[in-house]
Image (tube, rainbow, N blue to C red; front, side):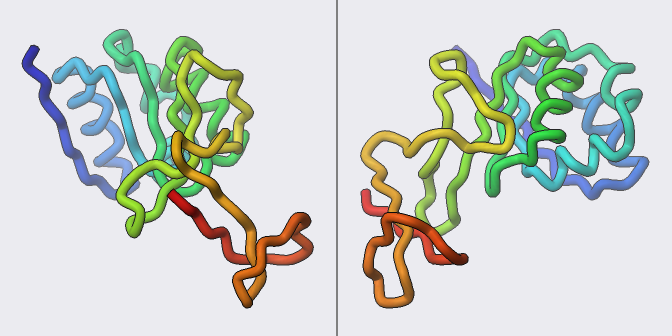
Length: 147
């Protein structure tokens, strides 16, 4: 099978949004993976930028970085994905080079705004400034991941 990747870097300007949508239709994009910042920016521009284009080729939506806020998550799924595409709302860091917390699309119930469960082999923990694992988080702390 021939697989292709389309990398499209854009700023959230009014001229970039139609190009992203048009290129996605023209190239029959099936997986649309972007940053939560782009989802929020597209959402802020309104539904018309997305709904004027066919999204029939889409089968999976993705987001990388911090989890998408619940409102943007619902919009991404309902408007961009037409209510039929699951979202891979993932949390990872550049240092890890892989997903640390992520859902398994179609295999688990998703909660908008939550990246779901630790990925296979990942054991996250909340620690204090000395590295002691905390059972209850009472303030902003560091999250450590053991793989």
